[in-house]
Image (cartoon, rainbow, N blue to C red; front, side, top):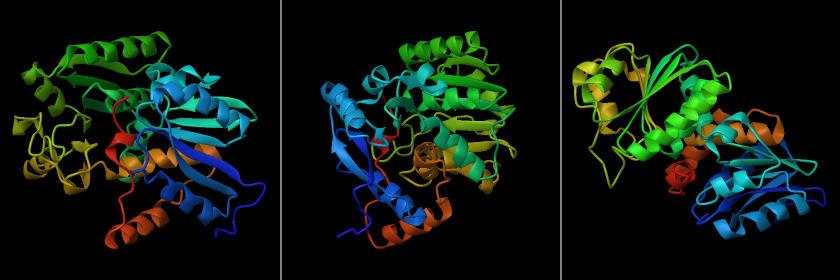
Length: 311
């Protein structure tokens, strides 16, 4: 029995379907224990048709908040009292914070990449970024990088519809006064894509290219001369730990410390949500050590990728 739980314990949780795989309860409850906070975090299965009632329950039960995963992120955004700037531009929510009955929706997916890059010593401020992809995760990364002061974000994507949707979000941000230069091109403009990477500070892959098992061994970068010593290469994929993109970068002049896989994104997007709930910094190094012990013991990994990608 957990003797921490009292009559004043605040409830938090993750909503979506499925959520049985989620590592979020492990992560957040570790943080509550670390700080001695009177909170407990559980998983609640919820589909799109149940979102409105579930959000009413968050309010009625005075829950401190909740994380939102597939397939509920967009419907959750429609049922908020307020939206953060990133959530407003994207139209999706993965974190709900309850302040005395006022529910504010946030999106921390893009924050996860920005914070993970910072954890590896790389700021996105005033940087030129090439972003591969225009789906849910890519959109969140684009918006967060622009809001956090990137000089430019150039998006390349295969599908025209998603690319035009990203362009529309970029135009809305520009109209709202966001200074970052954003451009949008199809991957078919192969020569242009490689030229932009040659002059970029950071390359981010937010597509499924390279993911195990469906696209392992695949990369959108086919001209190895695009890589250069000063380029930071970030792949949101974490399975396998070293993707073809990452290996190609390592083999063609990128410094090892500048080639980063996506496992940290999962932790740092959780760190962003934890700060919103508690006002405290997630004990990231201690949590990493705890999760490494769990992984060594054969316990489930932190999260499934479905908590992190398309909306």
